Length: 140
Image 1 (cartoon, helix red, strand yellow):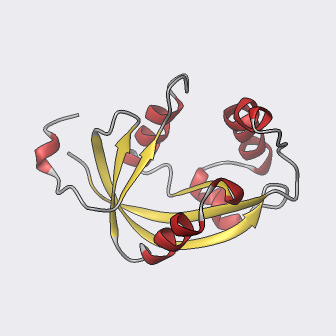
Image 2 (cartoon, one colour):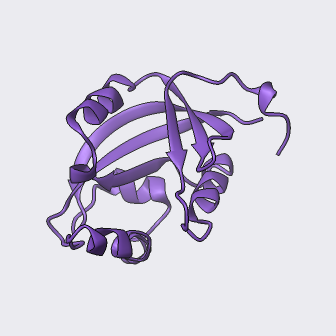
Image 3 (cartoon, one colour):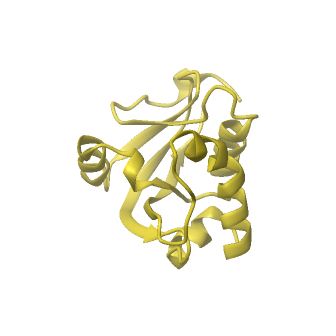
């Protein structure tokens, strides 16, 4: 991509990817950099109260996006945080994910299925998701 020193690294960071993710994290980061991804989500139960509070406090601020190895890839401004459900996700989440409802649900079943099963959880329609909308600010 270029020299990571070309962007300011902010205190607030969000990491995409995990060990054994099959490249999902890098694909999502590329979509952000290409302007095709302007929202993200995770199951709300997976976040602590402190993480939720920090996310809401980050609205309006710039966050550095890193890959699973902690390498800064781009900066985004958090526009809003919201809650929605897996079965009826907010239209702004689908739009920001660049997905139809069917694509969104299938992509997240593939990405989260094994992880949730390991926790004894299921991806049900009433599962509460924590969502964030953002805009790309700069890229190295």
